[in-house]
Length: 209
Ligand code: GTP
Ligand code: MG
Image (tube, rainbow, N blue to C red; front, side, top):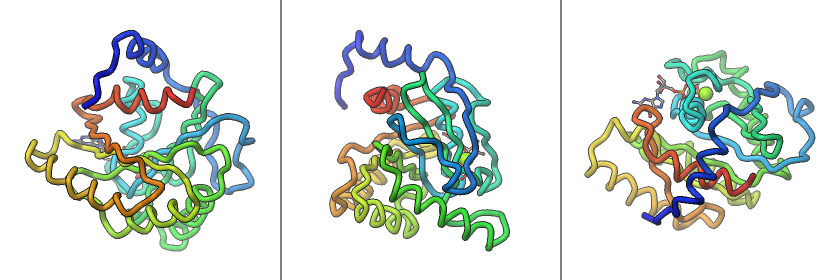
């Protein structure tokens, strides 16, 4: 792992001292705020831990809504960080406990957003470390490659697996993303529960401030 110099790390951590301001929930693309700031988004299959990870970054429990029911986040939730950056908590793709017609509608909104948002600097694409990369993830990788949207894999819930299992899932994920031109080569590993791997992710986000 890269060594983070301590001065810079302090600056990065300071940027996350206060939670971002909740701005709005977007259900339709017409409701998107103007693309006047850099934007980063948290994507991943339902229940992978997107909302929990956003909370962990800011050391809070109540920035983004979390739930054990897959599909809890059904809209694009916009947060404004220091008036410099939009953070977007996205609905999950794939399975969700909601009426199929509704799921289909918000999946379409999600894909159109991901492929067309001009100020979207990076998508943090979360993968549950217990599951590894699934078909639904590979479909999204391909869509993002086609639209040339930069994305970075973030493994989540690493507290649930052993070190050896983590090494294995990292190896498999690395070999999968080799084929994907828009994927960042560095894979981040996090646990929102144990609060590990957060500084590396904070540093990536802070680079867009
Ligand atoms: P949707 O919005 O429904 O797509 O889900 P999400 O990806 O936002 O997941 P959310 O953050 O709501 O978390 C889903 C479940 O996973 C909750 O029960 C969390 O407590 C749990 N969870 C999230 N992160 C971690 C983690 O790092 N470790 C463990 N053990 N559990 C986690
Ligand atoms: Mg969520």
